[in-house]
Amino acid sequence: MSIRSNGTNRRNITGVLLSLLLLAAVPVTFGQGARLDPSSTMHITLPEDSPVTVVSADWGESTANPRGGAMLLDLHTSLSLRNSGSRRIRSITLLVQAQEVTPGGKASVSVPSLNVRPGENFPVRIDLRLLRPLQGGNGPLVEIQLDGVLFDDLSFYGPNRLNCRRSMTVWELEARRDRQYFKGVLDARGKDILRGEMLSSLDRQADRIQMDARVAQSGRATTTRNERQIELAFLQQPTRGLPVVPEVGMVRIADNEARSPRMFLRSQADRPVRGVEIGWLVKDTRGREFVASAVPVDVNLQPRQRTTLVQDVTFRFTQPGGAPIVIQEMSAFLTSVEYADGSMWVPERSSRGPTPSAEEQRLTEIYRKRGLEALVTELQRFQ
Amino acid sequence: MIRDESQNRKDFHPGTKSLSLFSGSDLGWIDRFRVAAHLRGCAGCRAEVERFRTSKANLRAESVDLPEGLQWDRLAAEMTANINLGVEAGECVAPFAMRTAASEAPRRMDWRAAAVMGAVGAVLIGAWFLNPPRPHNLDQVIRTSQKIEIRNTAAGLEMNENGNSLVLLHGSGIQPQRAMIVSAPGQLRARYADGDTGQITINHVYSE
Image (cartoon, one colour):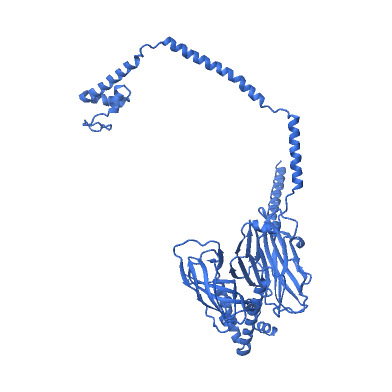
């Protein structure tokens, strides 16, 4: 009797242990997530006459995990694209849309500072996460389309649905400017000075991340008693060579809102200007500076003419966490000018804004990861 | 004369309430003993108790006298008739309530009603086939969709619409890359260097 009893207990204990193991295995299995069928999640569409073609797509560790009443999809892909055209590619923008998940929004992934010769392959990584209802449709979740390709002669291919041509041209002009500057430092002053330039640039980038501000266009201004009008300061930019000179500006500020900025612009260009991009530098009551980026503004400015630029908008400035930035001072700086013929102007390096260019970030990353010699090789590769 | 219910001091007299209750023998026995002891030495309070007793006796005497000309026999007959009337009315109502409950029992549908309902159903089905609901095109979906929220999180740029979200991640590694965020109204842009290749990637989300 006692032996049978012991045997029964042993079987019970074994059963409990097996159940615990199964219970422990369930979350592990769900945590790893089910592997996804790429064809059912992402669909890449390129035009027939596209200068780039898809060589391969590595879907890596794309997974799907149920989370409550929703499905969480981690989609990671590294596309290998080939330059099938006859010109060097400098940058590319892919439009990313998820009609089932966020039908009203758009997203894009751009890769600037490229130097892809005809026939060469280059990678484009797309890493995204989707949270959608469990009951999804049967079609692909994510549509990836080509929005634009910029070549080394600044010519452009693509539907330009996101107006990416303007940004891509600015990135390329800034890249040329900064590469030329660092190459000049290397040639004229040597590797040690170039190293110093890299270190000071890394410092500036770290500072810039701390100066991050969010700017949103407020639909309606909040009525408040402490609204006041202040004169806009302009970042020191040598007027020589500027196609457009901001002469004076005013803005009404209240708490963290800036209303109806007004600027008087004078053209020094010999071509009509159709757009300017203005960056904002906001100083709060504690003296901290925040950068909120460039806001493109359409303007019709004829050669050697003056115009008043009035924006009937209210900008609301907040810190990344959502805390309002109580505005004490505001400065504006010109980040780019678009001529009527579609060509662009960017400021010289000495008068650029506080945000380093993508190319400067790339070069400093090469220095940080691979050292000075790799940087020197990279600078000479672009000649 | 000062009347105080506390009666702690000898100068004080029992209150009107105590005297009134004493006069009707409604006071508790301890208080009755105390008030009686006080009344033995206080002529004023005794007179007060006597007035209460007189008033009570007068009231009782008045309530005993019935109005003149009241005919008890006739009053009793009317009351009996009213009671009988009520009983008979109750007996009349009970069968009616039973009949009403019986009439609410489900009855078989008349063939005419079935024919009318069938005809109406045929008209409705025909109308649905002639005017099928049109599928919403993309523009309509975008117009009717709720506001899209865009924000930057530690993982990446998030676009949220009706609880569903799309996040463009800052890199693929376990440790997200430090991204430089550029903000414009209705737009967020994050720029980061790929940890493996050093290639710069610029993610961009648009809510407008």
